[in-house]
Image 1 (cartoon, rainbow, N blue to C red):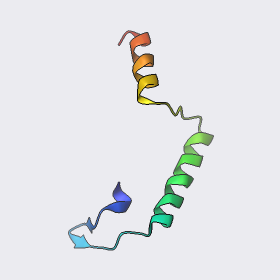
Image 2: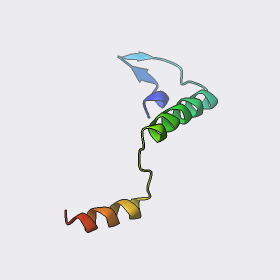
Image 3: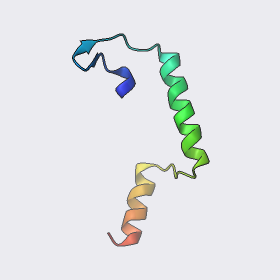
Image 4: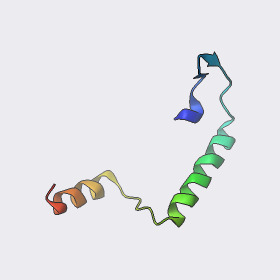
Amino acid sequence: MPYLLLEFDGTVRACPPPREVAGIWRDEFDAALEEGVWYATHAQIAQYVLEQGS
């Protein structure tokens, strides 16, 4: 989301091109994947929480 905002510190700035945003997201995904982040659907997360008794 922050990459798509038009205002930053009260000044108007241009949005980066979609390919640039996609590249940033891809790099963030790759880094998170290397750290062992669990990517799940909402249903999988809900099921996990229910199983934990929270």
